[in-house]
Image 1 (cartoon, rainbow, N blue to C red):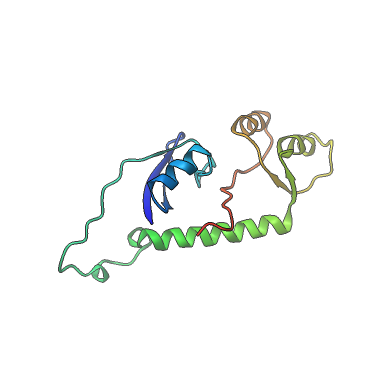
Image 2 (cartoon, rainbow, N blue to C red):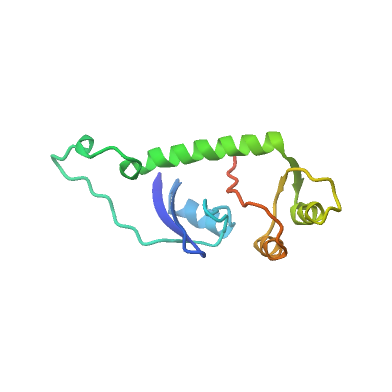
Amino acid sequence: MIVFDLRCDKGHVFEAWFKDNAAFVRQRKRRQIGCAECGSTIIDKAPMAPRIARAGKNDDAQPKSYANEPAATRAAELMKELTELRTHIEKNCDYVGSRFAEEARKIHYNEAKKRNIYGEASDAEAAELSDEGVEFSRVPWFSRRDA
């Protein structure tokens, strides 16, 4: 496994784990990597400093805080939270698939019954919804098969 610092086209930096560089390249090309902050799938590697272990140093001597936790721990916590969020959304919202933008507009303009929905929207559709004042959030949606 390898961890990369990634940056979306909006400038948000985040970490992600991959089997190898080829897995990163493949997922990036398929736009399967989403920014945890804004949902953008336009992703590049961000500059990162290597972490080099020094002989004789005890990592336990460092103060414990979120910033000092190993990346694997932070990634596991984030994946757990995203899994819980996904479960909550699936239990409490209607899945509308690729019709998300259309359904969100209908609800916004009172052409359909107000209800919680989720589905897929392209970056262009999301921008249009935002311009129209339709309230929505983009959530990174990871496959349940991901480690």
